[in-house]
Length: 325
Image (cartoon, rainbow, N blue to C red):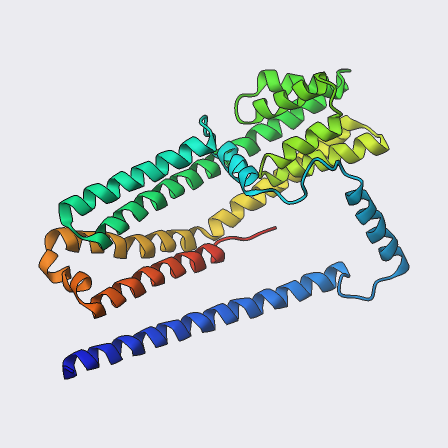
């Protein structure tokens, strides 16, 4: 065995072990902080304390209420429902199956064309994977833009509904006014609620169905408040104003959190995009320099480790930039 090759393998294994150990330490540190924060939240909410008779009664009532829900609505969404919700949040006018087949077809054509030109299966696989990742990033960007637009429209819609209710319109009439005056994406959602209501479906069931087809936490909060108000009674106009104030505070907090995590998100884009861009530039400028990554076993292992490190780093930095509240 070549001594130089053996030394290279030992160095590669040592570097991989060092990087993997650092990654494990970071994951364990993050997990420990998460468990500590979880215990603090449970202690503040009184969940960790011994269950009293009153809390036990409330828990039993909540479980009974969940069991009395409509049986045709699954509690946990299926993969098809999740994909439909993703397509609706992204604003796809085509079906999810059509978009999925288009993505697979584009990635397959890119793989075949790259392999035919370069005769490198790893490069072709990287190109096809990059197309899928780019389309997924574009979809996430569309979802973020539409979510911000939905929040702004939803606040205006709640104020419009409050004024309509004070003017004497019924709740369904206020929803129909929102459907007529507000554009996509908020308007069609209220239009669907009004159509289901005109076909004889109960208003609470229509709201529950609409809440299950969207990932907006603000809209779920609104549907829960309206359903409780319809069951207990009260002033719906004041409810619209209160929910509008709560949602406005949540949107303001979300914008402040985005400003705080902007540096992490920018660092993620730079640290993930820089090695990928450098890799493709080296393939174009110096193919002889990068050829050992494709022809030698050590190079293939190093390329696999690099890809795994980029994916793991992207996942870790994404988790660091997400704050749930």
